[in-house]
Length: 131
Image (cartoon, rainbow, N blue to C red; front, side, top):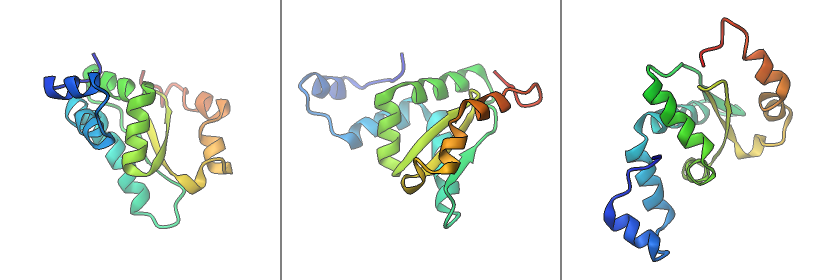
């Protein structure tokens, strides 16, 4: 299961009455490691004026944390909620390398390079592979 949804929130969801803030808070509470990784990437972007992206590339400490990160970034709803909350576009490589791109950088050369098959293959070298 990806999220630990409180009964009251599930009832509101079944009635179609959940706002984005409630959803994102559920993600934050359910996937704390993934939240920390995305927050760190977003902070690195915010702390570097003019940068196109900030990233987090430290491998997760355990398979449980890796699973959280994969669940968060594999779900369109969760990933989209995180992107809206932080005002970023997420990009992901190699089971742990997460980048938070400025929305203005999406479609640009740096973004296109990061999401390219070539970049993914380069990130699979034995010294970088951790998944």
